[in-house]
Amino acid sequence: AAQTAKQVIIQKLREAERNVQFSDFKAKERTLINGIVQRIEGDTVLVDLGKGVGVLFPSEQIRGEKYDIGQRIKVLILHVEPATRGPKITLSRSHPDIVRKLFEMEVPEIFNGAVEIKAVAREAGSRSKIAVSSTQEGIDPIGACVGQKGTRVQTVMAELGGEKIDIIEWSEDPVKFIANSLSPAKIINVQLDMEEKEAKVGVLEDQLSLAIGKAGQNVRLAARLTAWKIDINQENVGSSSDSDASEESTEDEVDEDVAVEETPVESETSDEATATPEHPTDV
Image 1: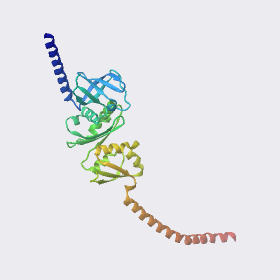
Image 2: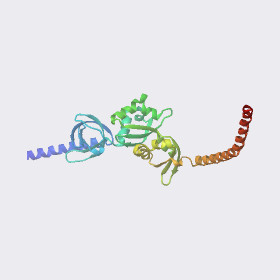
Image 3: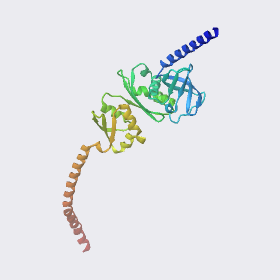
């Protein structure tokens, strides 16, 4: 009876510990936490979080990033689920929220609410785009995120393994926001279809490849960032400019016709002018 009571008490204590552990990590969902790589099983990485162990699956890892046992890394607690042997903690290094949390740590203006991150679009290991806006006058949201000589954004990039980050200014005007999201490409015009939520963007010929990006990455991230379907077309840059060009071409054709009619007269006069001085020399 004493042994049975002891086992029951120990079991209840373990259940209470697991419940406390679960509630602690559940409260930290979608937050950034430091961890140490404990062991690697195939492509899955187990990370020691202090009071528990989290699992970093291959789908949540940054593409091309390598992990070593004992390495300190920052991870995002993605999901926490109850299990018989303690909470099941799923971690992430590729989620867009990790970019948001890193900027909150590095930029005081974001932490105190003077600058707000409105949207994040990310392709882990390659490039990210974030849209920022200022809630106070006199604060440059892009400059605050970049930092002096780029120190703040470079710190975030280094933590993400050199991932490139584009910081753009958010705008309530969808036309301006879409144009900003396609930076560094220069946009000529934006036509919106509010029903289909589709935007047709016109760019110059030399900006077309820059706006689309490598393998369509720039326009793909811009579409995720703005939640608009973006169609980039170089031909719709200026239907008006084409008409102006056609008018200029017609004017040029008229001028050429006039020039053609005048050329024989000019040639005859030139022949006469050259013939008159030759006769005296011949004599």
